[in-house]
Amino acid sequence: DAKTTQPTSMDCAEGRAANLPCNHSTISGNEYVYWYRQIHSQGPQYIIHGLKNNETNEMASLIITEDRKSSTLILPHATLRDTAVYYCIVRVRGQGAQKLVFGQGTRLTINP
Amino acid sequence: NAGVMQNPRHLVRRRGQEARLRCSPMKGHSHVYWYRQLPEEGLKFMVYLQKENIIDESGMPKERFSAEFPKEGPSILRIQQVVRGDSAAYFCASSPEDSGANVLTFGAGSRLTVL
Image (cartoon, rainbow over all chains, first blue to last red; front, side):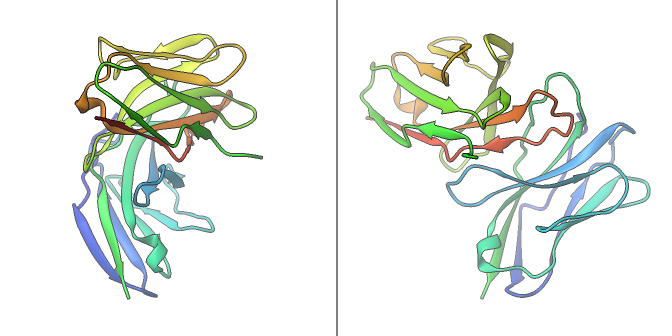
């Protein structure tokens, strides 16, 4: 699986859009980008995933660059409850062994 | 539809005792994964199981740790002769049989404290 690079930490004001970057310059053509988050002491939570088109769901938007070497997770109106560690994971979709390998992620703090 | 259920939520053991952690996957899910998170560290994959089969145990310590997912009942992560270094949060996740999307649903975790 391709390696991802994320900033260690970020801050964002409540009500603003939180933009979390992820670099995956060695991503291959059949690898998807997944985002999960872990709110303090809780189990990780799936957010969104995509291949090359931008994706949006009720939680967030995912913007993937045209060359697919990087992506950005956008939380459009961040709230205090969005404070969490966010993980960007690159993985082949549908591969037999479906384990996800978590890196260190980005610790996002939403400030009032 | 209940989510992934883990119990106990908190478990205290003395060194040398055994710890058994249980995980009931979401209804309709036949794949189970166990992860460990040491204090102030990231999530580390331990083992991936399907019903009655261990598919990937590349993250399991070679000794004292074992996992099973029987045909009936929950998945069990068993730690024998626990040591203080086993103190951690253990998370279970599940996914459906046909989960090409790689979307895992996680439980709330079991927190093991070894005295």
